[in-house]
Figure (cartoon, rainbow, N blue to C red):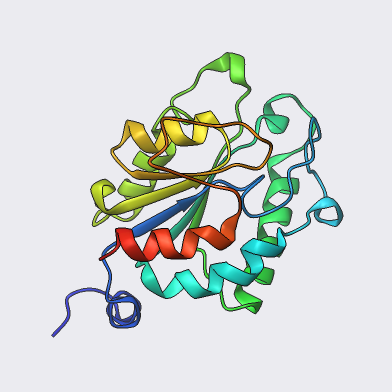
Amino acid sequence: MCEKTDADCDGEKQTGSHWSLFLDRDGVINERIPDVYINDFKDFKFKKDFIEIFPKIVPLFKYIFIVTNQQGIGKGLMTIQELEIIHSEMVSRINSFLGKIDKIYFCPHSKDENCLCRKPNPGMAYMAKKDFPDIDFKKAILIGDRESDIGFGKNVSMKTIFVNSDSNKITEADYSVNDFYEIENIVKRLLK
């Protein structure tokens, strides 16, 4: 008899994996708008490559998380409630095209506060580990489009994939891709 919840057992049967995926939001899931904080879902535009490829890699992971810095809250440009509305709608849409998100973690603090939860600091990874104790960071992949994302993954020994969304080359990442289309093969190789 399984000592975990039925949902946990079903998840393991579906994925056959003990790997976790950590995704940045802006620039990975949705189009990044330079110097703009998205505070209304009408401005949230999914990246086409994410919508097409994400459902293909979902079955490869036991857990999938979003980890996102949202300093617009700390700057007073949006509220936590507005962010939660955006995330609720985003997750609903992701679920509608056969994706899944187990939990979203966000840092509401501004960059100058230098809090533990703001990437590249590892606070959001530790929050996930507290909520899902069986996470093994050495069996986790971080996908991001900023140096802070890659630093976050490296700080807890995750494999890192840099999505080159605006010609910034991050040499510290384990892999660098131009779009989400290239990620499927990398993920399959890593999980072998």
